[in-house]
Length: 564
Image 1: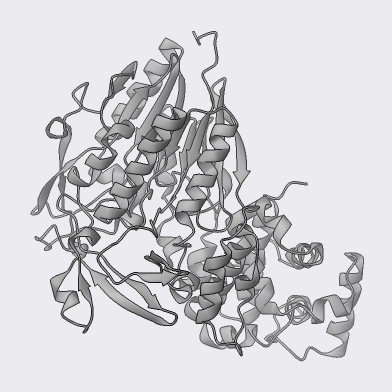
Image 2 (image 1 turned 90 degrees about the vertical axis):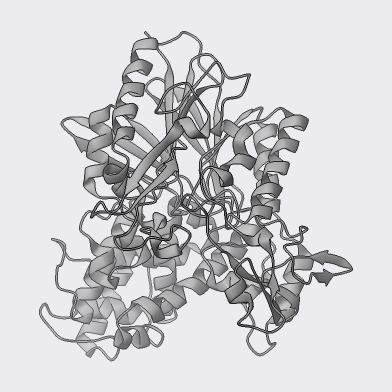
């Protein structure tokens, strides 16, 4: 029977990727207004899936909001460090100790693919700014340092393995603490690293490595069970014997839950046992891992791979077997990070359902975290946006100094964090068009308009028309259809198709959190275009019409996630 008193709310923070700009990683610091800083360039930020220099401030803002709401329990869903560098992890741990001592916060951490690597670790290399437009290579790898004059060799850049890389975070759930009412690993009550070892084998069985299992169950207050699942799987590759090499293991960022079923099946048995005990003892169970257990984009038809091939998104999508295994184990709700997505997706099996709450990152669009309040079998979830945060004017001025005046960047004139990250995502979306789209189509996207796309979809069925120069009768049909949705011909012709594509990526990533960042007219145009997607789902993408038919099917799915 469930206990009478409800446990407290829990803040869930994913992918904080904290880079301490005030720490020295061994390179030549850049003096910004007389303060020595370790900065990443705007060029690096623009091309990345996340912001770097803003990360520590974003975590501070999130924890400040957590404290203001009276919440005292915080889950860190992996990728808490920038890239697992020794200094990065130590700096983050010091910050968390500070918040624990000053505000009484309790943290419960899981490693992500950026935090540790295998049993021994691996080298890291970054470029840090020495002057506007100039950078210095800083690396833990002597071979890399030797390739470039002026580079710096720094052991602080190294990313450790398990368990060494986890020890700085030991006080945050990964090992038992005196105040816990209950703590266990899948192997029992012993929290020592040597008592939590398992063997990971290559597919051919010839390569075997011992790794520490970082999963744990903790009861921090009466009635609340936090099930922290280490889905950060290092599966040895056939023929790769040196575990310190990057290619010694299947990329954990791709492997995730799908590899867990192969490499760590004992976790499914343990999850089933925990779920059964929680029900029997009346505990409020909340489950977490770094990786999604259900596709956060809800792509039932494999559209990502059909359109763009085996992109990172396609490779990171969990197989249906994952949700089936967790449902059969009794799990009903699961919180994940990794994909930097704001979404809720569900899968059913044998009349039971698993809900995956995909938590956004603090350093990607949309910047946010969630608050989970136990209610019955599942937790109620509130998303807390950080989009309103002000930007550091000194950092923004530094970024602008990197960019030639003749090529201004819209994001560098933002004054809010959310707008800055939205502009960064837009820039990355344009890069994705060039990198992932068919070459001829990518070129056409940058010269066409929303009207051209509408005309393409309204052209006669089976036609081979491409973007641009539709016949007058098709243009007239497009104008009449647009008018039914409150749009004019000018609205469509004045909207670049490349901007529509950028909105498509942003909407897929952010869901309802996108709406404050784009004009209502653009949302109206997206809704109109989504009505042009044919049904049933198209399967042929070798023509422009077929490609965009499937593209708009995904748009329709993303729009369905918006609040009515």
